[in-house]
Image (cartoon, rainbow, N blue to C red; front, side, top):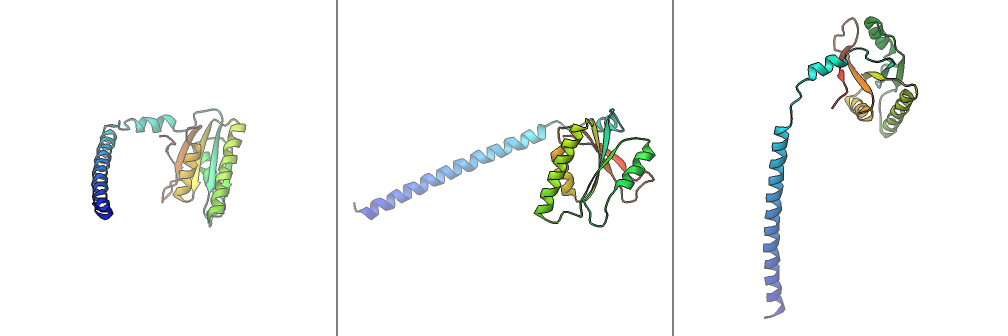
Amino acid sequence: MDFWSWFSRLDNIIGVLAAIFSGYAAWKLHQQSQRLRELAERSPKIENIKDLITTHAGVNSSAPVALAVSLISNSDSIRNSVQTFLDFSGWKMPIEELNMDGINGPEDLENFVNRLRVAKRYFDAQNFTEIHLFIAGPVQAGVLIGAMFDNWKSVKLYHKPQTPPPQVYEYWMPLTK
């Protein structure tokens, strides 16, 4: 038997083994995918969301603070709107602002994240017990804030509808998992 015949047979054997291994890997991945789907279907449904929302509504602690985040280029601040809401609700709390002229690139994102970290440390240093969060800006900024403030203090989210009511904002829900 010459070298090329032997090499051809070895090539065939390696190809068959690779096909068997690939089929086995595909079968195992399919099984894992099915198990993950079954787990997702069996995960408990959120049933008490209304109770959660009403439990956290309003001011529930002794040292609340409002965080007014404005990340839109055509508005310097949302402080007046937030103050209108707080006055309408009869709540007294300081308003801390984070204002930027939009988020226009990686430098602005870095600045935004760093300013969020400073605000979080400041809230801890001042012993604030709950954060009332008002945001004017892109949804992605809200996601970043949620990631930064997750599992920290009670954070309550407020929404400004398209046609704002007299109090400007509406309580949405607490930041929760």
